[in-house]
Length: 273
Image 1 (tube, rainbow, N blue to C red):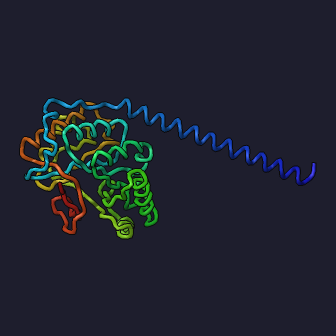
Image 2: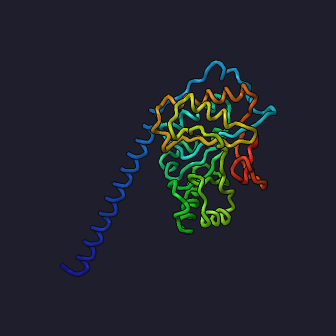
Image 3: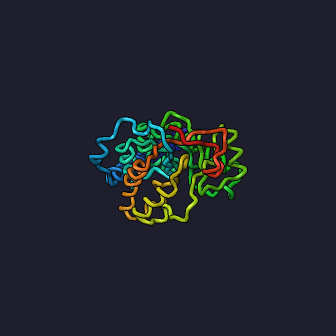
């Protein structure tokens, strides 16, 4: 066999292996996407009540103390569809700080969050502990997530919430370079347990109502640790919304602000209609 023949054979083998690898990757990606779709389809859903159906088109347009429901770590097949169902039925806009790797797994849920009028924020790619990251790693966590969320929604996020609320110099520098409002914190001044601690629906209603004051950014979750809680804990959300409205509260979303919010950990953000 001549040298040219051997070279042609090697080239043919390489083409075959590349084609085979591409087929395997596409098959795996298709199976992964189908599994994610099945997970979402099987998630618990919320059925609007008679009270929901009687709500005016813009129930939060009236004046009154305003709070923001903020959901971290999502999306997830287990919790996010129910949360979005409730918010749609109650006509509440919320702020979702999405985790990059979860957004990559459930892109349709990211698009639904955006399409239904909620604010999409950045919660890093892997929910990393930022004080342990190098400056390069911190920037990658933020920028990679922002690029994906921009691709999925058509809107580049401007809000960032550190995982665990723990900032780092490298993260702050990356946020400044990216022109983002970073370190969006929350109000949690009581000793009540949060949803990721699985206290149950009654305790969660108590948590939300206790922490609610004008301009409070309330910390909630729709993925990660909260997934391990009993499914009936989700019932807190419609109950808490109804209770807050009965007390005169309205709901808004988080937006950048030049004025630090002492109520929410010094965040350069405010709750707006």
